[in-house]
Each structure stands twice: as structure tokens, then as C-alpha cells.
Image (cartoon, rainbow, N blue to C red):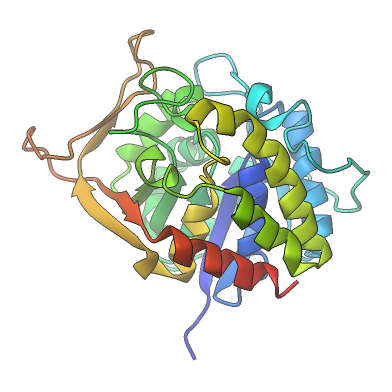
Length: 313
């Protein structure tokens, strides 16, 4: 029997973060050691509530939940209520969650959990700004040896940006954190807009999720109905790109994706292009690749996997 993958998930729910969590928290392939909240899509107070609610929805109160950094390392926080709604997960009714957050700070949890691990053991999944991951690496650089890989939703190359003309939202919110992570020397698998824009929630796909008929799938469909309203107009499409679940989908079924080894750097100085990820796709700089850059996906197989896993709730 294949051993489970030890995973720490760092996120800022977010409807697409919610679908990522729904995939991760019933996956027999994963040993989810903890969930860490980071400010991003909305403020930390809302993120903490959203994360606790989602844990309640899938009845995984055994997984510890932590609050991390409530703002980026250098810049002021930028949020995305215009996409995700005032709550961050518009599309479902709010409730007071039973799940309680741990007292320990999320960065300290990442450090402590990594220190007790074997070398190259921990997989970190990050679907929000990279503040917590960078702060952990700055505070305790020795934990880098414990990290097997960092699986990130963020960045853009050929697709341009979704918050500025050249920057993807997660990286734009905390480009300085991204810079730390890109230079940490550990394997990085990066799912940017180039691939996530190929995973669109069409009406038929949302209806198929709704038709699964269990409470989790119905909540997922309701969130995606709201999520699609903004992006359908933005992208002239029938729905929204499901960014964040790509990270966990890759862990569960890596052959869904195609990658190219690239050197990636991030802009931290220019206000015009702040957060731009300079992806050396054609290897013109001669710099050693530091990222596996996701560049293609089998979208139909992705949604088949998502529906199969949602049907297990």
C-alpha cells in the first residue's frame, strides 16, 4: 500500500479554495497535517471563519486549523471581494462554525510540523498569498530541508494578469513573499493562469456537480454559481476558472497536467508590473529552472476527478 502524502495546506477561502479543500479533505492519498489561513481574498477575520465553516461542512474537525499572517510582508493588504463577494465565499449561508482555531500562530505551526518531519517529507500546498510560507522560511530557514515540494496556485505568463495587466492576484498581494519562496531552493510546482484558465466551470459542469446530490456537492455548486457570475463576464465564458483545486488534483492524479521546467522570478519594485511573474518559458536567460510550470491540463478528466471525489461525501 502506498503511504499517504504528508500535507500542510495554506489558503484564503475563496470559493475555489473551498473546492480545493473538498478535494483534499476526503482524499485517502493525503495525510493533511493542518490547515493554515492567510489574508488574501478577504480579511483575516473572514478567512478564519470561512476556513472553519468549510471544515465543519466536510466534518473534518480532526484536522487542526491555524490563523497565520493578517497582512503581506511589506505591502498593504489587497482583497478581492469584487470576485468572491463580501463574505469571501458568497453563494452559501454563513453559520457559526463549531471548528475552533488553534492558539498557535500558523507560521509557528508550519515551522514546528516541519521540524519534526524527515528530510524531504512535507508537501506544502499554497493557494493564497505566500506570506505564511515565506515567513516560516525566513524565521526558520533550516526547515527547507524538510520540505519535499511546494505546490502553489499563482502567477501568469501567456495569459497576462487577473488583478493587473501583468500580475495574478495571489502573487500581486505579496510579491515579496513569492520572491522568498522562489529562492528557497526546494522543488516548486506552480499552477498559474496559463493552466487554470483552461479549467472553466461551464453551466453543464456546475449542473453535474449539483446533480451529485449530497450536501457538499450542493454547497460546491451554489458557490460556483456565484463565482461564475463575475468571471463569465470578465472572460466572455460560461463560468469561472477553478484555479486552486488544480494543486490538489495534481497530487491525486499528476498525469492530468503537462509541465515545463522554467526559471521564474517575481517583480517587487515596479508599481506598474508589481507581482508579475517573469517565466523564462523559452529559456532565454540561461538561468537554472527553479519551477515546474504547469502549461496544460486535461480539463474533462479534471472535472471527472472532482465529481468522483465530491460523490464520496
